[in-house]
Length: 71
Length: 138
Length: 270
Figure: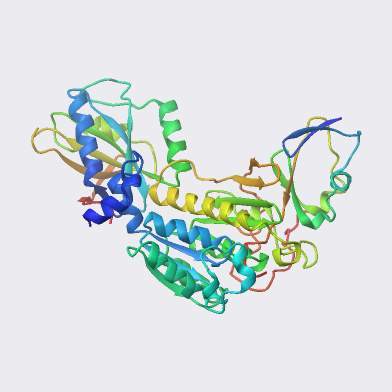
């Protein structure tokens, strides 16, 4: 099926859930990102149970805590 | 709303617009923050009349979007009275349906001394609120 | 107020801009921006806001200048190593623009002190380098109803967003709570391209100036992401989150706290 991931059209297998998509896209830990699906932020505990469908728009928003300071 | 601070340059813009459109009423929106006006947005008076005004909802919607995008708030709707005092007419009161904004009227009844007054209009009740013309932005 | 001859000359490139003018410049001169963190992001933000003539800049940082900072914190120079960052920054700001008054807060922003500090300012810039502080600033700006610019950088990537509390999406609408300590590396662990701080920090200053002037479209309800390697900017559209634990319905967070908060309570939603 076709998904739009971070603005780009990507072909994936059918029946993928959000967790599986993260793994496929090299997101090492689900805690590194926040996921927006079709305009809504979804909570981590539903990643496994959220099925993706044809045409879904997914954004991975990475946590970035840096500010160029000492840390 | 406790009062409106109107920078002189905005007042001057209102006067220019009103004079250019007289005898038709000019109208527009004043936007700013916390009672201080930052800028005005001229609007079309779709009634094109010398004793009442009506704004185009689509045009108003676009302007409200611009106002919000800039982090400003709509403070007042203004219109001019080319020949009468700066006092809401029966019609002005009847049509003052938008909640949460003040109503500013600019009068050109004394052509060389334009002046403006501000009102809150709620359910037909008119209360004048202070309007002060301020120098600059400080 | 009025501008002096010197100011008209100094700010001439602003004044001839339609959307700025002498009035806009006077507005900037009477505005106050707080920059929390005088490091990578705070440095360019402070430099540009000073150059622009923002009348008062507040600088919050409890740290001293360190050699490792000089790769990106361009407001600090080699002779400043060992000096308190806020002092170093204040000196450069004075040199760029004597019109600017600098208030320094040489201590760490915490739940106890930040609300009072923020209250004095028109706009806040998050120049901090850790999640605890980023969530603290977001929450404090919510409680004080202060508009602010959020930003973060890491490796070759950056992101930023402007928050108008009560009107647009806040940091927690997107990133509910700080990640577990080992999930996301810091800049000192993973590294950061120095100039990234300049790009993103300058964008933060841009948003501050637009807000103060009341012009343009602020970066609200959008997260701007930057990939320096691909040289790509993307603006990801967002909405205020009805389930946000700070600014949503039934918000679980009702007061400002320092410690990384427990997982947002969903209050009956599963």
